Length: 341
Image 1 (cartoon, helix red, strand yellow):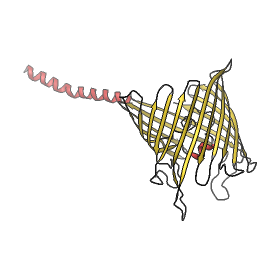
Image 2: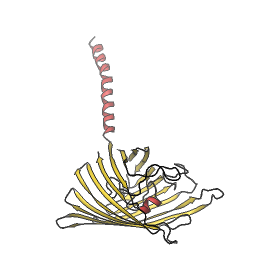
Image 3: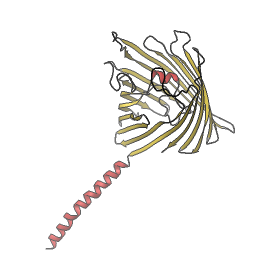
Image 4: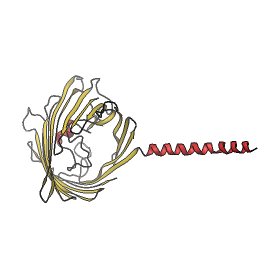
C-alpha cells in the first residue's frame, strides 16, 4: 500500500515539474529578446507651402504636423545566430524596415557574420547611421536620391575587429521603394555593394562601392544600363576646451545611372556644449548630372538639439536650398521631439 501511495505522489509531481521546466525555458528564451524603439513627432514649416493639391491634382507637402518615424525593433540573440526585425508605423501606414537572420561563425575567432534578409546598404556612413542619432532631420540629397529607402534584400557578409570593418552584400538592386516593381526584383541581375572601414578611435574613415544593373522600363525600351556608385567618408572626433566634444564629418559620392552621372557631398560639424546641448551645421551639395550645367542644388542648414533626459531629445533645424536653376522659395524649418525606449 505504501508503494502505491509513493508511486501516485511521483506521478502527480511529473506534470508540475514539466510545467516548471517549460516556464523556465520560455523565460530563458524571452531573456534573449531585446525590444527598443523611438518616435519622432515633428512640425515642418515649408516656405513654399500651399493648400490643397498641385496642378496635376496630387497632394503636395504643406506646413504640417506629422509622425516622421515610429520605429519598433526586436533583436533575438541566440546560439550561433541573431535575428532582427524592425517596423515603422506612421500616418502613412506600417512598413517593414529590417528583417535579418544572421549566422555568427564561431570557429575562426574573426567575428564573421552572414546575414540573409532585408537590411541597410553597407555603403558610406550616413546610410548606416541610425536616424535616431543623426543631427539633421534627413540624410543628404545625394544619399536620398541614389539610395531611396536605404535598404534592399539580399545576402550580407561582415567581418570586424577593433579597428577594421568590412561589409559586403549581394542584393536585388531595386531597393525597397521602387514605385513600379515594389518588393520584386526588376531583373535577374544581382548587384554588389560594400564598405571597407577603419576605426582609429578619434578618426573613422571608409571607402565604399556599388556595381549593378538597372532596367529601363518604358514603352518600347526594356534595355539594361550600368548602375555604379563610389564613395568615401571621414569622421574626426576631438574636443574643444571648456565647451565639449567636437565632431567633423564628410562624405562624397559619385554615381553612374541611366544617361546621368550624379555627384554629391556633405560636410557637417557638431559642437557639444556640456552633456545636454549641441550646435550643428551642414553643407549639402547635389549635382544631378556632372555632364550638364545648371543642375546642382546646394543646401545650407543647421540648428541645435537638447537632451531633456537620456530618452527625450528636442531638435530645431533650419535649411536653405540654393538652386542653379532658379531662386526657389523652399526653405524648411523643422521642430522635432524624439522619445526613445
